[in-house]
Picture 1 (cartoon, rainbow, N blue to C red):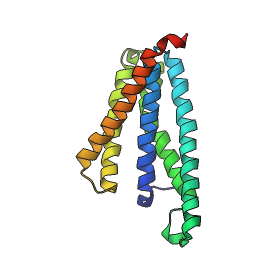
Picture 2: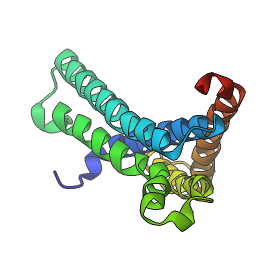
Picture 3: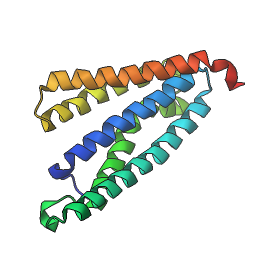
Length: 171
């Protein structure tokens, strides 16, 4: 499937959620002082399971809406394409928070800063995807970018705090 502007909302939706949930998993696990190996496992499990869940949900929602409204085929989005767009975006953008952890396996010099690098890279992703969201909904791009950064950052901060508070349960 090539990039189709018609599916831009699905790309933005999947990308934002992929980055938010993956960073939240990483932040929570980091707050709990879990090992990098565990963080990578949890991160990839989140990418695949949550990405698939979102894609299937988007597919079923689009399909239900099409059946309910009985629109002409050429006027609506194809349910399979909405699900696929959501999944691909979730995986691609959602991998950004994990990138530094994976790279640290091959470049040990990154071990000390991998969480910080993850936060910075994800922050940049939030700004870019938030800007795209602003364009789609015809809102100020800067405002939309920083709104997405703030929401994503808040989710990660809460996850880190929960991980930190509950770190004693990690064994």
